[in-house]
Length: 475
Image (cartoon, rainbow, N blue to C red):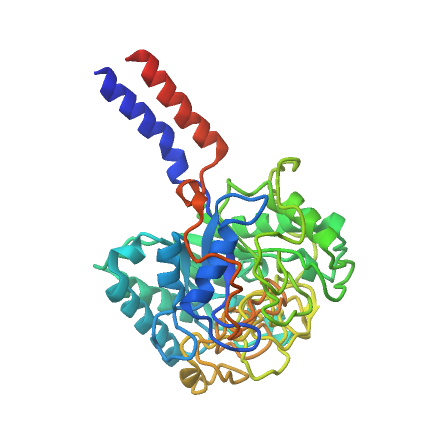
């Protein structure tokens, strides 16, 4: 009896650890050059993230597209890389390139399920249908030049299509969500989308909120206000922070001044209190690959390294409670994560309040070029379903030359045809640059040594150890 009681106690104590909040980064499907990332590139990135000095448990990856760059509908090579490195995935399907392109996203999802089976199911944290589509289709997003997006009813159609696709498969029961800027959620028309989801993804970048005081000292309050607005729109459903960050370099946005020092302040004040308590995908690990966007949100430079640009430890950070009050006046949202085209045209991100001008079409923040209020991640143009399919879609304002090569969803300004092109932080998300350059040889492709405990909160580990010791002494 004592043995049974002991085992039950250990299982009970371990339960919180199993459900610990996810920590990860946003990853585009291409480099800043537009070259598609291969499996070895994703492996190097995932391994670097898991072993960043000053951190523990950063072993989840958010993707913007299911489609491998340079193909029409092959599954993205980030999947086998994640399986090999024991990285979990927030899968993404790009939804702003039209029905034909989304059909290719579905084909890639079906192929991935067939090819990887239970191995895929074992690494999936959730599935996101679309990224900042509501914002880019809103009056603010269109005014910022970040269109096209899609209407709520189109997103609902796509969400139901994904539900039918995974029914009866190893992914049945996967948590489904949609990622948008907090301003995208702060609209009564988004309620029909919320009704279909298990979780709500929020992109928020105080840096881009240049219509209100947004100096680094106001960043925490702006972020908490955005989070409160999103939680109100979620109506009790889980809210995941899918993009946030602060640029280490680049142009000033309102009162916000990019710098390594300010990026560290934002990490400590906004990030640290959330880590371990909320699912977070930061923007971003690296967006200067190889070219440096303006602004740049990467925690590391152009070379993969486990040594970040600033101290990532959270030991001295103060935990603060999130505010439930809505933002006061800003209508800007985090820059959208729309994939932008790789044509080299500047794309603007409207989801954030700030404006960014960059030519990179990476996933993440990097594609907003000139519009204010675009999310860093969405601004990059992405050809999630393949470049060949994107050119046929009428929604994309620009054409991307690489199919699915873009890694970021952020093309806030224009072509939303490519979900993950190179990163150029623009608004809500930092774009991830896509390039053909191979990962630095300094990073190992083998799983990080600490993957066995990824995501475990110190309190959960303590509870487990206490239960073990208590069980031993009672035997």
